[in-house]
Length: 301
Length: 201
Image (tube, rainbow over all chains, first blue to last red; front, side, top):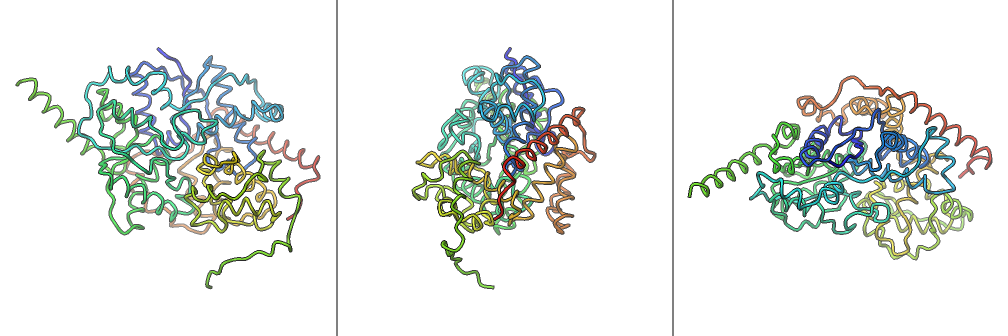
């Protein structure tokens, strides 16, 4: 069993609770031991981008230092925003001109030996598609869904060192592995409006509407994400987006871990499917029932 | 009032040291920019910016400190990294925008006041509890910006899903977070003293 530190971040305790539930359930099913960082704190998220990088580096650095203390050499986070902050802290530490100030503000021992990755990277590189495929119990055959990666999954390329910055494919491959049909999606990395939902709602209205519209146009019945902020904009705010666009969108936006979990045979309740705002359960239940009926029919034939 | 194309008289307000300040703060060679426009073409926010990203870069080169630090663009940048990914000169444009936000905060030239309020309240929540308290953030923001109904249409939906806590959870190590903020502030005070503080716009 692989043992990695787990940094879920604040969203996953609140509006993205189902992302936390499904990440833990999927990792358990795939024999990845997630060690929650004890007493973890907020990384500073987007708002910290208007303060001296030293502050968010120290905030994120505290989580890394605690994880190191737990004897972990890798920390994985499901949130791309948190990942950026963790990598930012390591960058500041590695910069010799900034290291002393960083350690002074951090105020605790830190070796900087730990590596920060996304949960997606752990699933793709450490577990691997073959191992996932072997554990698939109920492939999601017949589901047409597009992966929406958002901004920070593979950007900027230099610190991220994962997937293609212009045309990421990791979620495409994961979805194909669990039986999903994945059409080409040209808006994979277009921005959804990020943290402007509260302060400049019309920006999210416009940018997220383009993404929802493109998903519908390529024939997707579902959008699959790996970022709590993207999910919030596209799902929680879908009614607002519809009102602004003057048309009604009704497309579920699910976390990739929820779909992987279903395919691995986990219960919808464990994966928090009912916590989504736009209903995904009905469509997924129909699909699973139809697939089960098809399997029975072919077994009896 | 009709919105007109704004023009700048670049001879009037040139601060030749500005490019040096920005390059030092961001660690990026802004002088390398040759105006290919890839950043603006990649930017999803150009339509709300007062100056597109490439013009911000040019204005820095021209020492237009006041125009740049008063611009709304630097606060409407979402740090999506599209510009940084596509710059042929390897300039981390998003990092430059971040440094400009920090400078405009220090010089008190923030044009997007509400965004600043939101960011400040987010950080205050982090400082107070160790983790951001989502439920508390929106009402405080709405109160401070005089928009009591902002996002209230989402409340019934959110409440039925049982996702949000009603009482903030203070992490056991909140004291350490407070100390990190305090040490950071002390460090900045010391840094400003050594360099005689930020220069006026």
